[in-house]
Length: 125
Image (tube, rainbow, N blue to C red; front, side, top):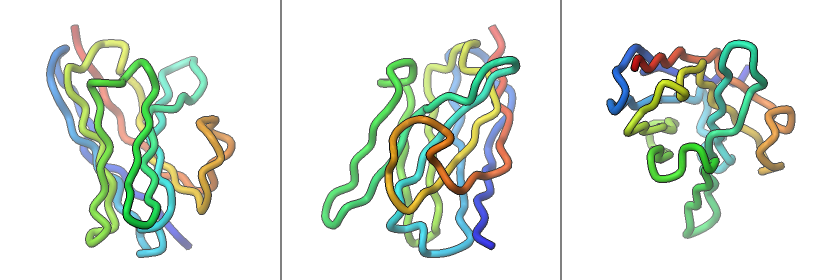
């Protein structure tokens, strides 16, 4: 069973930074699109960003709400994807999930096949 395990969440003050990690259990993921999503209490799970790997090129795409503040990267040697979050705001408070899928099917969460358990990020004002 393929697994994703997130880590790195916590409590941070507004304006601070956190880096989340998502470790995959198999090297298969090194070629799959990997996404980050978040879900705040009472709200639907929303897209944060995605990293896609095509031969010779790695591309990233972000939601407007995090563009310029969040950065996704991957280390294929470690089967790990990272979400660097800077200039955090209270509205970034949510459970953050990483997701994987063999093909990129858009930003809606139901299109993604495999999920981690989530990690809580809380930003205090």
